[in-house]
Structures are given as structure tokens and as C-alpha cells.
Image (tube, rainbow, N blue to C red):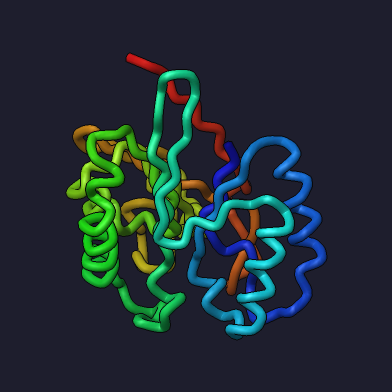
Length: 212
């Protein structure tokens, strides 16, 4: 499967030609699952509806606070997609929003608990700063991004700054584990407000799951 964890668009736009081409070609490789990032919140509602139509036409599964089951033989995995809190306009990006995220995700998970039961779970979520929330809710694997790798990476230190985490972010890139929860933070492919990366190559992350 291909996981898309948000920020596919940047700024308000009604032109999704390039995105439609990307979605269609990715869908020919493997099933694609998508959830929102904060930059999708910049789309006007009419444009966001058009964006969702592009996904539908391109066979991309939109996990908007939703759960899907993936089966491979007798093995089943529950795939969870967390909507980014900014989509509802509840928070501003300048604030660290751990508490908002934690309450949002907990509310959603409490309401789908029977659907998830004791399954192996993979979550698609834009925000690595919510790591403690993923741990508390017993999610096995979290695929996320948002931190841009810290934008500028300092040797032996790590990233310099990340949205939602500020200076010297704790979760900027790589794998973080606590108990049975493992979070993979991708540095991503693009840029945002600062159009420069230093010591911070763009990346696509490949994750392989193996039985113990």
C-alpha cells in the first residue's frame, strides 16, 4: 500500500491536474490511502470538495477519521486515518496542539473501539508531535510527516525547527518506539514557508512488516 499523510496541496487552489496525474499513477502501483495535513485546511470548502472528487476518480481511499480493514490471506490489519485538527479550523498552526490532538484522537478511537478491537493497527496521521497519544491508545504503527525533517539538520543534533514542535523538535525524522507503538516520521519531498533544506534530503519511506 501507499500511504499519503497530508500536505499534498499547498495553499488555496482549484487546479488539481498535477495531483490527479500523481494519484492515478500511484494507484496503478498499489492501493493508496490518504489523510489530511494542515495545508489542506487552506483550501476553500468548494475546492476541498473538488479535491475529494479527484481522489475518488483516481481510486485513492480518503481516510477522514475512518477505519479500513486490509486482508492478506488470514492476516488482517486495521488501517486508521486521522483527520488533521486544522481542517475544522479549531486551532492555529502557530500553537503546539498536543492537548487538542490527544482529545480529538481519543474521542475518535473511543467511538470505533469495537471496530478496532484487538487488531494490529496502522495509523495515518500528519502529526508526529502526538506520539504520546498514539502510545496511550495502543496503535502499533503510525505513519506521519509534518516536521519537514527539521528543515535544517545539524550534525549530531538533528532538526532545527518543525511546525507544532518549535526549535530542536523531538520527533523530526526516523523511527520512534515506545512499548508496542512505533512511529515513522518521513522528512517528505517538498518545502513549505522556507523553500530551502540543509543537510536534509527529501525522502520516500519504505516500511516492511514482518511476523515475529
